[in-house]
Image (cartoon, rainbow over all chains, first blue to last red; front, top):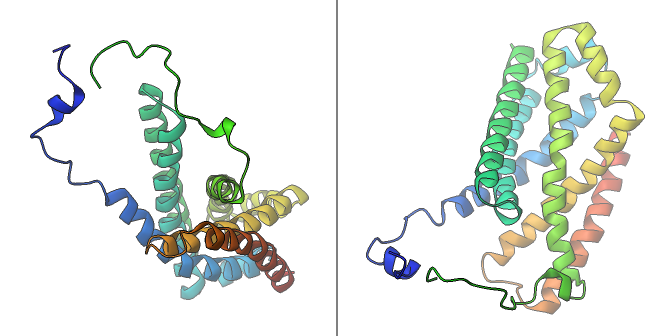
Length: 123
Length: 128
């Protein structure tokens, strides 16, 4: 086996057929965030600084709540994809795999906590 | 590559050998801003969780998020967000094979830098 080149080992196996998946995922979420982020900045920004009662009243309205929930869900997915690229560039081997898994857990976890909290506020 | 000792052969020039350029600086800034926004995002998630839990917990989280430190994080995150947004638009344009020549890429780089400061000032003025 030591005499086989990487090319020889890979020949005939075909591509993984998923080469553009990550790129496309980032592209779709980036366009979604292009719409969501300005909406989020100006709704969340308007609410921030209010009293507890004001925040409860504001986020019981559907529009700010839906904007915030979507922004957190799409934003953390986009963050996870981008962060994976960052890790792949600077961390290698087992440490790379562990870091990617941890950042994925953090991203989905934070998104879930955020969406749950907003749903609880809204309902 | 064959499984041979690759030795200490010279590698192709990497980051350290290049003079900093607008295109490379605006590229790394996109990565830095995108990843740094995690801090503000986690603060916002915590703030929402606290608001959904109880008034006491909300007051604790809200006091931190609206403190001078929280304000500073939010201000820099808004700047980073607008920069990352404009730089993202630049990437969406580039994806079509448009604007890849150096003069246009550099013009768009200045637009990202200037535009993000301008949008931050507008945001602060609108929300103050």
